[in-house]
Image: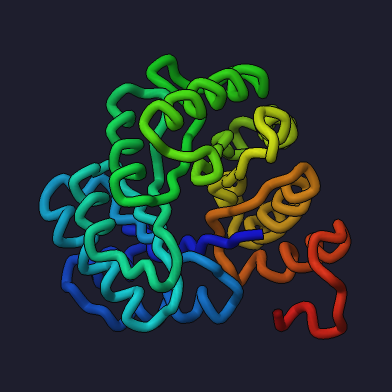
Length: 260
């Protein structure tokens, strides 16, 4: 189970200030903390970054990989910023991941970047038509994204399908729909497709004390259905992910499995 450490987001005041001031200290401290807590990749979310996005993404990728031997998930809607980050990404630590393409024609060029730079890419199963109504509609969109990825020269093993997790506080019925979608995604290809979720979306808008509880239990249900990756706080979910993998016989049990 791949945990993509999510704490480097421009939404967080401390991170945003560090980005704006080009202060590596907080960025590197958070990246190291996520790595040591079990993250296998670090998410660099710079937002839309319409002005100065290319320079900012390069600065973020460099700052992270100076202290952490991990690949980076380039998280922005600015395609030029994504390409700038891909150009300087240190692939010695693993291949980068782009977040994301979708069924929106404006996001199709992301697949060109993934093919050009041999990057992995997330396919968010939404399009111009808005939010999918159910698991079946998500799976249909996923099939279109898969076909398009192959047309652009992106191997299916480099594509992560994202069913779009919504807030349980306002869209409770979608929580089960996403679980079903993860199950259906496994049936779209042989070998099964890789899948990813933005885990903390499930608890957005909930009281602070409830958020880690919702995140951990939801993650367990998703892993059971075959989830392979989550953009999440490694401090919150690493123990859950490792334990479920052992119970599901995906990793070999050892007394020290928490330390692996």
